Image (cartoon, rainbow, N blue to C red; front, side, top):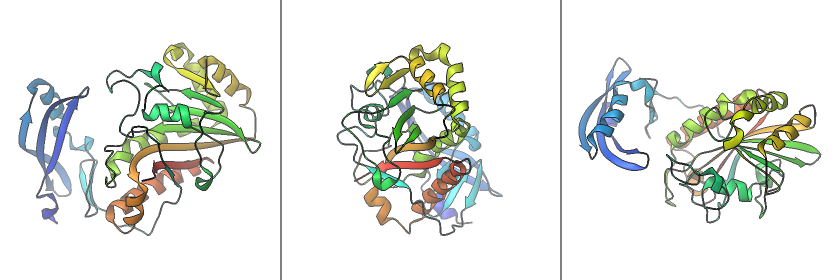
Length: 310
């Protein structure tokens, strides 16, 4: 066991509703491949709120951590991954223009203001203002000055995706289930983070049943009672949520429909990802992306992930 990989411990800054409540250093302790965490140091600015977080450390299965060495802590156990030569090839690199890659949606994390989608520099606004579904391959990907087609924001509990976009392209209805996750850093030198992708990929895979036109229309129709907090646009102009669901229902019998699952995660930079081809972190991320892609393609849909072209 290479115990030296854990000598520096794990450092976390803890926030509650956007406010800093303290930081903690803890050390993984290994017993027959099983992991538990030993707290080394706590600096609590708000003791009560910090203690609520600290309870998590009693449940190692809730914490995931990947190391440059190729080790990973997942499900409360330690693994050393042996990598096969897999490389993910469907990355799309976007400029994101002047949009803020560390801001996911308008408002704060505890109080999102979805009514302001399109009017700020969040990633949600980038989708609303720039998204184009008129492409088939990563090399054809483009953004536009005005969003075309239908765009439905399904953000919230029980969501099928953050956005659902439908446009006709090459005589096909292109239906995109778009999952958005803000980057952990906007530094141009930020490194690969497997953890930055793990949660959003899990959400995308969880909702794969919706990559079927009839199921998607039925599921969204069943959520119409909660659609007062949903937002919808057609060619950039605001429409009622049930207008989109009725449209989706009308094309649900069409065989000329192509589903794709799109994950927007700008934490990964093209320059670093390309240069780190032989690093363990790149290999870890590629294994995760190839696994997600295989899951999506197994039901006849396409999978793409969008990183930052810097």
